[in-house]
Length: 182
Image (tube, rainbow, N blue to C red):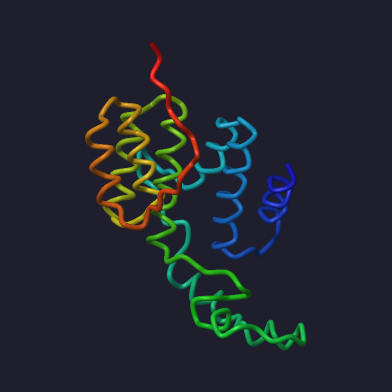
């Protein structure tokens, strides 16, 4: 509830950057999903859906460059502290890593795929996850969403093949043991 409240507050800010608006919608949608309110989560994501399955870029390269103009050095001067070399690199602003507009768009495709899969609309989910993977082929989030959709569609071999191709997914031992039922 706290994350949802903060995301909504962010969305109400006047003259808010399109990047932060995008993040506000995504964080609100995630919080609503965790609260089992998928319909409300969809409303936040639908902001970027236009005409069928067309998803609009949530922000432009210009928006990203404009926000990167706020240097970590400026933040450091305001707070009188020192920041690590990593946090003062160009792709970080105020300690946040910014996605490129295309990566943000792929993230939206993944979120739409997950949302449609949760609602049982697996064909829609499959289309959205395919678009995400075409944009960012090595995305672990897109790959795992595709695996989930394949499993829901009963395509376990395709799901396994996707898992084997994804080098960025790490599997940790769960400590679970499976017993065969007699």
